[in-house]
Length: 305
Image (cartoon, rainbow, N blue to C red; front, side, top):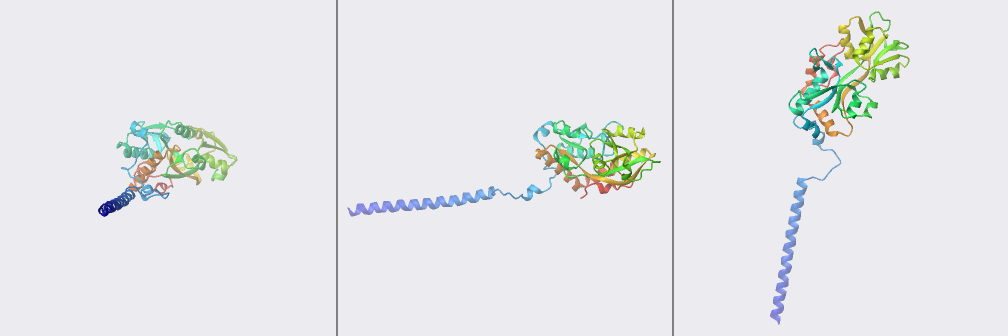
């Protein structure tokens, strides 16, 4: 009987030892697995990581899948706004903004010609964007609080204001002199908004296209034209019977416009613009398209490294 009891105790002791060893092994495996999980996937944090805030480069830029599959960008641009966006003598799109877009196409597809340019103006460019006729706007788009309600702006890549242009024999010498005068503006432009707020008695003649606006000025249908400084500087080079008077005002940094709630497209645009800034590519473009603009210094209008 005693021998049977001893055997039973020995068996019980052996089972206890086996369980202890098994639990120890489970504990070691758990600690090891937990450590591996921690190394593989850190706990989520509400704070941005360094990689999420670092500037994108051309080899990390990504486009929305539909645009990648299409194989080209579709962009709303100006065709009557030299030197920023216009048609050259051969009818091809040219200008500072066009060069920026072509560089983006090069980043995206390895081909600066992988882009379709859609002509837009100040009135229809945002409707074209919201109706998805274009991927984004690159059409002398000034940053304003009102427009922020309709679209998402990229970082700015050009900065300019508005000036007053009058005939050489005009007695208008300052913006204040536009009070009570008939003034040509582009419909929907920042210049038009500036006059509404600062010279409300100016009688605005709102015209949609630059070509029609210049024609109205030359036909003598208004006392002055109030518009973009760069464009008007180009205008008086070929129309010496006119002059710029007064100061440059209504400064509106220009950016590109993307549809709201399309972060992938916005990130691509911002990443591309940052890459161009780092490469000092804006300087290359401004030297090509705007080597001189009256008393304006073009190098002060662009981002630099």
